[in-house]
Image (cartoon, rainbow, N blue to C red; front, side):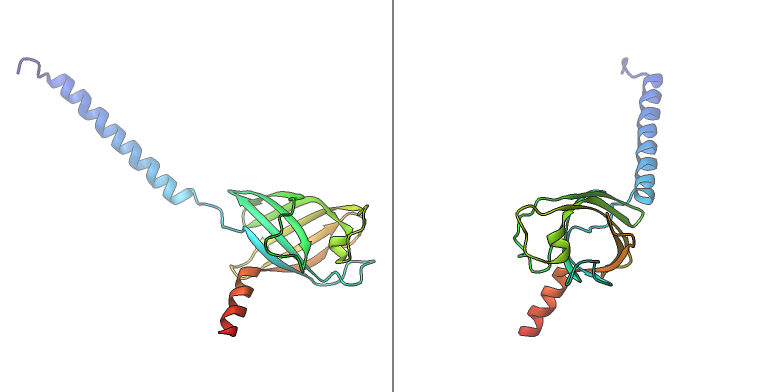
Amino acid sequence: MNHFNFKSLGFYGVAIISVLVLFKTVSVYGENNLKAPPAVNGRYRLTLAENLPNCEKSDTLTLNIEQSGIYLNASVLPANAKADTDEKHSLAGILKNQQLNLAGKVGRSILCNIPQPQNDPLNSVTIQMQLVDKGSITGELTVNGIPQTLKFTAVPQKVQEKSQKSKNH
């Protein structure tokens, strides 16, 4: 009992209570203010409101998005691309405040949905999308060399595939 000191006991008690209060404060702040970004990774059927100029049949494309937190990598593929296609991601962007911004280069043959020639010219593309709800995404596509922006809607393909499978059974 000679080693029992009230000053030491008081010091350790205050230190433990301070750590518990600090932990509780940080936990409450994190639960209220730190939210994970919504998951947007996957394949989307991108339907343009109108055809691109100088393209005959460019109304439907596939947008493949991979997500790591708020950072996005994406590629634009022809509508008939297989689900297991391992395409190099030519677009990069960020997700901020329910807004997706992607920029990069896409081949003209993909945008126009025509067979790919050997020297396919690349067009600079900017895609801006707004997350509306879980069902679809609306946005605008800007292609270098085309003065107007093209509006589109993007619908997740998994939803379509599941609904088709349920109709078959």
